[in-house]
Amino acid sequence: MADNRIPKREEIAEEYTWDLRDMFPSDEAWNAEYEALKEMPARVAAFRGRLGESAETLLEFFRLQDEIRVRLHPLHTYASCSSDSDTSNGFYQDMVGKANATYVAVASAGAFATPEIMALDEDRLNLFYVAQPELETYRRSIYQIRRRKAHILSGEGEALLAAAEEMAETPDRIGSIFRNADIRFDEATDGEGKSHQLTNGTFVPLLESTDRALRRSAFEKYYERMGSFRNTVAATLNGEFKQRLFFSRARKYPDTLTAALDNTEVPVEVYLNLIEAVHGNLDKMHRYVTLRKRLLGVDELHMYDVYTPLVAGATRKIGIDEAKATVIEALGVMGKDYTDLLREGFEHRWLDVYENEGKRGGAYSTGGARPHPYVLLNHKDTLDSMFTLAHEMGHALHSWHSTHYQPVNTSGYVIFVAEVASTCNEVLLVRHLLNKTTDPTERAYLINHFLDSFKSTVYRQTMFAEFELMMGRMAESGETLTAQALCDKYLALNRQYFGPDMVSDEEISLEWTRIPHFFYNYYVFQYATGFSAAVALANRILTEGESAVADYKKFLSGGSSTDPISLLKIAGVDMSTPEPVNAALALFGELLDEMEKLV
Image 1: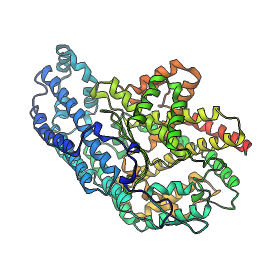
Image 2: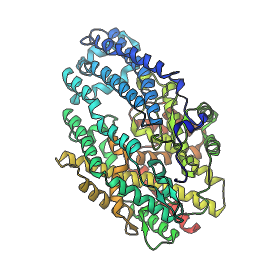
Image 3: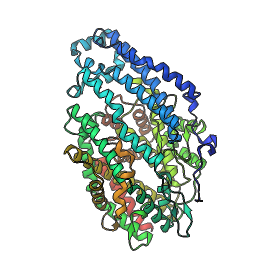
Image 4: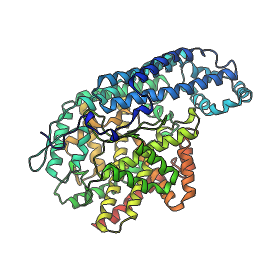
């Protein structure tokens, strides 16, 4: 029997699970709404060929789109949260499929809208705004459609692409079920011969152990098992990049990266500048690796030594209640309105806290906020878990502000800004904890945590982004993403980023098999850009106070009312230049200097 058995879902106390009844009181109520929404495709299709007939008709169409968004979000969120609570539950898997199919049916029925809005004469459209002033609410949405004129197909073409979207989600769905429901690992063994259950959820916590034998065992057992499925995962990733290539070419983009970033109005140069800036600061990452090797006192530093804390005390238990209280205290600088929202989320079960058998790994916030956001955690009573709580509540409150202060059509924010609020919370938390102590040991382990955040969020996520770009370019040049090719490229990249003092074990060449973000269409780079922006914003909040907080809340409340670069400028940071990334990594160097002196 393994130690620390993962409980079944029904064994988790209700107070630590999310209350999905705020969306639907029962599965039956969800199904009633699912049935009711079957009329939506016909209601949408009734506008075909009519969007240019009058300002009133165009306004009526956009109001219907708002209704659809407001009703589809809880339909999908309830289904996905139920499924993620236990990914082996076929009933909820079917519910997710129904929700996705509903979305696709509505999208397919409305495929005519984009080319019709695109075809509107500019003068006629301007007359519409005069004739029906309420259309001003949708000016941004109309602009978003018309700005991509070169990439929009005919009505029939758009309908075909909309219908293909459901099929295009297959690689991601297969990968998720494989990682979270089907894969099973042999138990890891510690230095005393005791067994520990190894899952996707326990893997990183086991690598944080001070027991090196346990770390090595978990590392080797995990990748031994993942390696046996390397060809399956590679084929799934190959399918992912083939569908990206299909859509990018169908829409006449030069490559998959440009297609992905154009959706969120992020210049490709931002992605490439990030990689270049990080390459220019790899010396600091290599210094960090050298320091880790020295502090751990090992002859060879291996990849299973990357997560374990460097300073005694970092492994003390931090229960969920202490974590909540500390996060509220740390974010007090944001004002009472912000901390009151945190308390509401904590007290009214927005969170699903602990791991259970079959539960999706990792952590996330659902994004939308109708009636409120939901947050999935796999809390492990560690310092890292407390930072994850702060991170995900940053997402949640960003969603809450955008939903409450923007009209429906601009209430969602794009992924480029998605990681800013979450990471800003983390930076404020670590700065708060550092300000509370002068004890060298405690200060050292907090700085170590901050350094690890830089390492994992800026350096590591940029490495992922570079690898994802490599995969995209392979697909674009006609290469097949084979397991061997991916292993070779990943291992070489790992050696480049971690430097000569790290032993890049052969097993790490398989790390790409466990990263779900490679199915998210050039998402990961935004962790690094978001962290860099967050460092700048947190510094401004702490040094300038109320005026900076006011600007920051304008950003939180901005949704997609303008492009993401402009939104961040409102908050006080310019991501169109590499300066924020270089400044963040300069701070990494300063913290490294202090850490070297403390230890």
